[in-house]
Length: 125
Image (cartoon, rainbow, N blue to C red; front, side):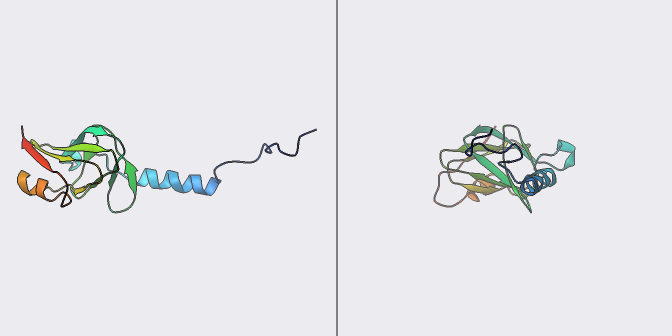
């Protein structure tokens, strides 16, 4: 005899259609690409919850993630990251900042395009 408070074996915490939708979005979102696929930068020194997005979708980002031009990088509260361009330019983002990966702009301009009012650091190595 099963108690009335028991969860039936067929119950699920995630609806199958919702799970399928999440998987479809994750598979279609491709901020990660090989260097020969047009990427121009990568993430470094990832701290906290850093997100990336392209035309559609948004995903959590990890260390060494390769970035295509026009990828948006967003930091949440208590997060930080460095966008390390292949040409040596480094753009540091602190908490609650947004940055769009640009392919043609000089390093100083890339840094200046991070959200206004927040600390931005660009250095050439």
